[in-house]
Length: 244
Image (cartoon, rainbow, N blue to C red; front, top):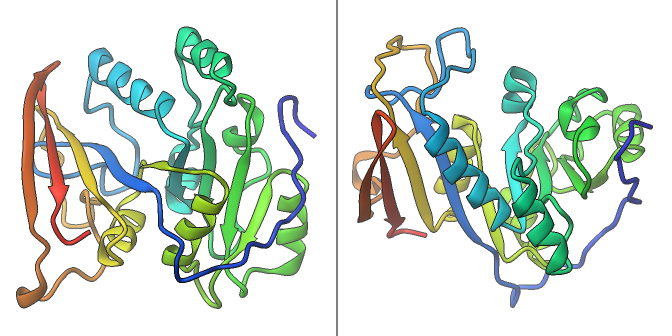
């Protein structure tokens, strides 16, 4: 088992209609034309050091950080808090130095050598569906807490309720575009923070901030403008999701 990995047994949680969900926000960086990566789905540095520090502060203030399996396979993020001072502050407050790291992985494809397993202390959660291969689930159970939610794909509304039961009150979503769509289309997002950088990526196959099938004309989701702040060579836009 890699150094720093905490093995947690598979746990089942009872779902109740009276349960709430965490306050949930999406944080992302996109180009001026709304792209979050290239047509090859390769990560591009869109923002600078100031925005990276802003993102680190958001992670440090969250109880859990969630990404989709596509982001893990393409970018291999560790999802750790980078600032030593922020990690120390979390521990001083009786918390793990990193937020719970959650991967939405319907078919249990998370590599066992992924950085979320190799880097940083703290709890890892892999959310899979009932269609995930049993042998892959057993392997991941050696590395993380595995939660089975949904039959063919992860049931996101049920997942966030389970995370709430685990003590997650503040949930940060770091993509990708498919997970962003799934969370928004299910009414599970409260706010969106987006750094818009001074790049044009282009390409109809390049992922945008929100992909998926999209809303029909009469069901387009509205946003309430919260703020705009100039940062690095771009701006940070903050929105409240009216339909959440």
